[in-house]
Length: 262
Image: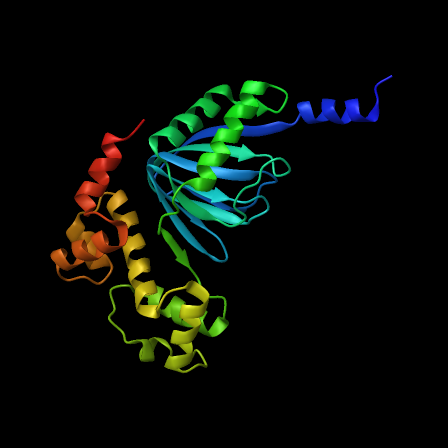
């Protein structure tokens, strides 16, 4: 007869640490809002996608991944044809970030993801599987979080301003005009943005424009067209903004993506 301790050990050995899924999604494809019982790491080996939640949006280009905790409602849209690799981590055996975030996928993490995809499923009862899952999680937790997020304010008054600003990114309206109908003063709106997004309103709007432009560039727009779409009449000014937010010029950004494609 098996003792309780032996029974628990046997059950633990049968636990699935990770599952995997690989998909190719066409440009313009959208997966409506849903959630998973497992934590999820979504990695774009090719293309650009955007993950949207009630709290914000995360742009996920190639060589980046987004971490989505279990139970977190999210939708996904594709700006350019995507090759997506997803790992699902069992929530009871993994200590991981409990909020969405975009992370860099360095060469080591990329190879770990692809090896887990090749194996298909990692089980706790297989020592090499358990070690691989542990290293994967270590790399996810320690990797640098990158600023590819649009965080929305929670206060309804600030959300009105955010919606007004996003309705036409080519407009150069002052915050005083965007705040009309919100029920709050400009000073209150500025305070709410800083408190709830961690950014001034001006910085937040620049981030919105940079990430919208990134989606346009991924879809094949030129730097000039992408800049015009977010209110930059000067291509050089747009490129300077893009470099300030993403650390490099649009041309080099996508050239690096092409060279590093697995």
